[in-house]
Length: 154
Image 1 (cartoon, helix red, strand yellow):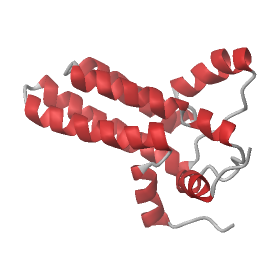
Image 2 (cartoon, helix red, strand yellow; image 1 turned 135 degrees about the horizontal axis):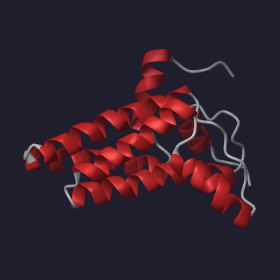
Image 3 (cartoon, helix red, strand yellow; image 1 turned 90 degrees about the horizontal axis):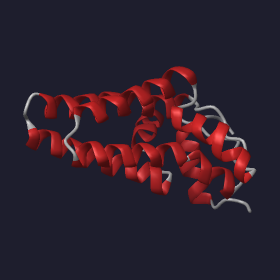
Image 4 (cartoon, one colour; image 1 turned 90 degrees about the vertical axis):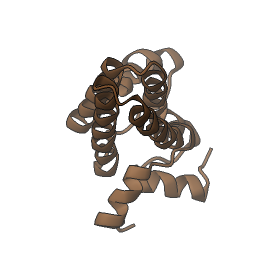
């Protein structure tokens, strides 16, 4: 099944230029949805450890072109459901991992030093941003990347 123009635009923002089916687009956002759930849990529990752990997952996505949640899909879920291959994370998506790492570190640090109201505000904003990504495939940080570095030639 082909993808709509609006989904194509949201994927292009993130640098996923070669995704051509809704099924593949759905699994590309699996990692982002899992991060969204982790940020919700970390904020709700006011847990610096969980938020720092999510930041380390983002570092993996930044450094290795796949997040641990991508690896979870690739090595466990994909063989069971015979799912599509997912591409490595392009530069705009890795930039989003960097933003997520910094944001979760600040949020966790606010909880750690006792600034719970600031931690909650940062956590809610982080959950909103990651929810847009995990549910709608719209990435605020990748949009910022596109504003700075522009769009690829088609």
